[in-house]
Length: 258
Length: 305
Ligand SMILES: Nc1ncnc2c1ncn2[C@@H]1O[C@H](COP(=O)(O)OP(=O)(O)O)[C@@H](O)[C@H]1O
Ligand SMILES: [Mg+2]
Image (cartoon, rainbow over all chains, first blue to last red; front, side):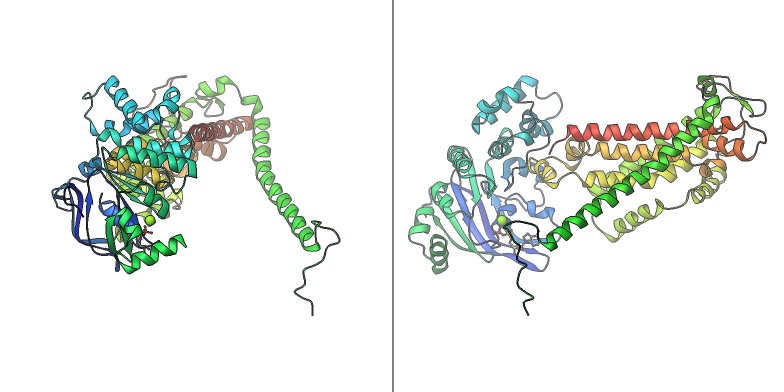
């Protein structure tokens, strides 16, 4: 791989256990800044688990034990002085099922700003401006500008997913993690979200878990193939799909394309 | 031999014997359950009508606002009505903050450990303790040990202890019913636990919490035993229509206890008065109950997930 690009996320011999079950084995990877990196592999291979290591979400589950390092822009996020709240501002996550909060569209996007600013530090106009900007960035503003008071949960699924991306943006994250963000969407909506991701990567590092090989090929710059908790292969997407170095990657890709 | 042959019906898609049997069963079940539903309404309806008919001669505005006269054989029930409002209000002021905070702690903060399991089990079991036991506890703890004597404040504390478990349980249940993805969403944008609770969890569970609280209002108003030994008094002289007749360290009259005394301790009370007192007590409870239902429906329509 070229070494010119900056590294955004770096894992170093990362292992993870759910209780006694080891879900990740010595994963070492370097994820480039302002690229889309796809995590692919069979169901249960640990894609979601790896993704959740990048924002320390695994700690929400009982009995999780981690060994190794995850560095984000050079800083190990498992260091004791790391504030989870600051970390989550910098690393946003989008889930499989859109999960807007039971608030208005406007409040969904303003939510992050409000909880991170002390009272009086931001006025209504600034807030409205930030909300509009975030909705513009996900191409949602024109569709919802006349009913910003409507509930986020009443939108179409595609719009909900875009809203879930938009609500991360006012916090100015550097990384967006996406766990199969299109699996609840139909083909057209998937395409819309993919277009969105292509524009977003200019500003953000995007890591996307997908079980859809075609999608990985369409949108990602680099791909990581995982199997049984191990990182098997990490290379440019075109290379990984056309000339996989590892036999197991080749078998998987062939299998998925029939 | 041909056990496994499907039954052949004469035409396509007509009901087979088995299908007809299922349909019949379905109808029977529907009817039986319907009867059960009506059957629980009938006694309530009969009870209320009967009470109102018997109470009718005494059911006047004056009956509510007047004080008892002729050694409780005439006049109204004002001091008892105000007394009930006093004890219920103060018991709520004690029980609701404690109960809701405990419920929030148990559901949102406490980790699953043997300690929280014991607390949860204790709470559930306390909810089933008979009120007379709470009464005795109240006598021991508040009247005697804490030196509050027989007073409104002792009675309120006793009622609070009695209502706490259900308030805690309904709070935890209401909180637990808020879908997890909402919490994940908050967590994901860096909200603290308390910010999540305040902005998302509480607004979406408040109707459940309030319903639990209101049902406990009814219980606190209706129970006789817990106040009988801790703060209720047979008779207290009060001005007609006076809203603030009692000090908290005094005893007060109360509807449930008043009904108990005039029906068992005082000979010669006119019957309509007995029934009218019962109607007022029941009305108090029904009004609060319907308030709980209206609130629940209103809140449910407001929240659409
Ligand atoms: N919270 C959890 N507790 C215990 N085991 C888990 C948990 N989450 C995932 N696992 C296990 O870890 C393995 C990897 O899961 P996951 O990362 O979700 O896989 P993928 O996203 O690739 O399908 C699976 O075997 C799964 O059963
Ligand atoms: Mg997964």
